[in-house]
Image (cartoon, rainbow, N blue to C red):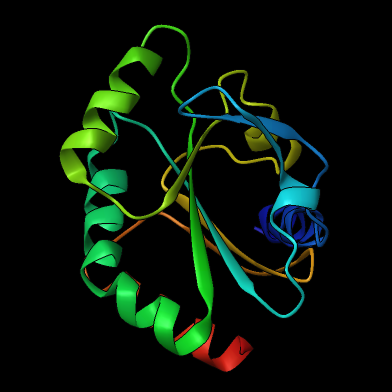
Length: 159
């Protein structure tokens, strides 16, 4: 038992050690290149990176739930949500039609090679990180109904 606790503590320290955003380039839906560090770096602004995929039901549920109150988030907190699709070459063609049908106001980027996902050691989606001034302030793995309300409270506390 001590062995498992020690390993858990070690892994927890390792995962939480990632405090800075990695320097990666991603593509938008219209194939323009954006850089995570230079294109999303307004001082004091909160950036929510939501890692998702077209085949991930909980991911879509989370983004839909956030979408319901997103206008309030933006108005009250100056937040920008960047929805990072981790769809690979087999499923990437589904992203644009899905997003068009949803009419989400989020910034959508493609992590086709999963470089961003790997740089952050993300194992599974949905996975959400909150960044302020290039520093990771909060991490949330998975999604359960109502988690978007908790995320809003965390965002308010970081403002």
